[in-house]
Length: 411
Image (cartoon, rainbow, N blue to C red; front, side):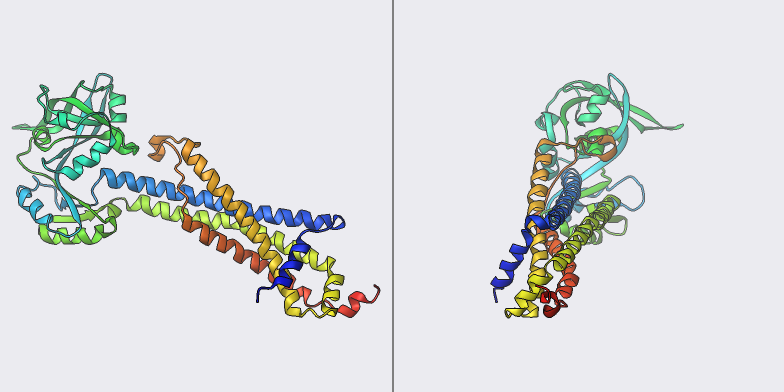
């Protein structure tokens, strides 16, 4: 059942003669409508995927996949070496990084700016390795070199705003650094900028600095403690399960968390944005379906005599029905093909040349990323063909109601 007869007649009908130019115009508009819907949907999904994947890559590259934190603020984990050793035995854990975070003020030549100073324990190769990927100036090796002051790695925007260049001296101020009889008072510490990194994620580049654990402990006025133990995994989808296992191993005073939980709001927003985008742009497909419906209804009205002749020559009514169904599917297929080419082509060019710039302070990214997926083409095309098929049902049914005797009476 290759429907060769039906396909032949359907193709002939789609190429209307000059006296039926109106039908040709409506058919062309129908094809453009399907193409516009498919193209818009592919581009919109590429933008949604781009935002999600770019933010996820940046977050996973710069932050932990899973972590152990204090349930109640205290002096930190004193037994962190033993805890870190136990956590390394969990399957799928590739690196364990005991860290100490602290809110500080970076005072540079131009201005001061609040931020986060993160200290990483020696031997945390996975953590330092991720930072090394984003270094644009300096090197990690200089953290261990004697430069007269402890070394620090700063985000590119933080360094730029504060006027801190490579090898410059920055004053790091800890609000609760020194404890006196009158209470805590700020402590001032000099650091040398030995590296500047740029991850592309605004919050990280604008507020974060990295140093050795012992240097951050000195700034915070803490003994040999950490306030978090971060885990990197070989499969990020296992982060919730690994976080639960780590929490059970850590005891009652610690709590486990993971990257999906820490970034739940932004991930939920991106997921909802994808749903809204699909629903909104799918309305274009409905408009295209109406054009197909009108085109086929007019064609049935124009082809009454032809239908009567075909039936008189032995064509079955189910064949007549299939002729008009195939016309609608052909319109949907041609429109989908054009839309896919335009959608993927424009997405590639927009990503390659970064056509659309963004304010990084608002969107955390400097440009709109486009990442079209091959799988999207399958279900977008399937949806377009389904809508086109549904639009053919009524005209195809009307075509089977033509009375050959009435249509040929005056011929």
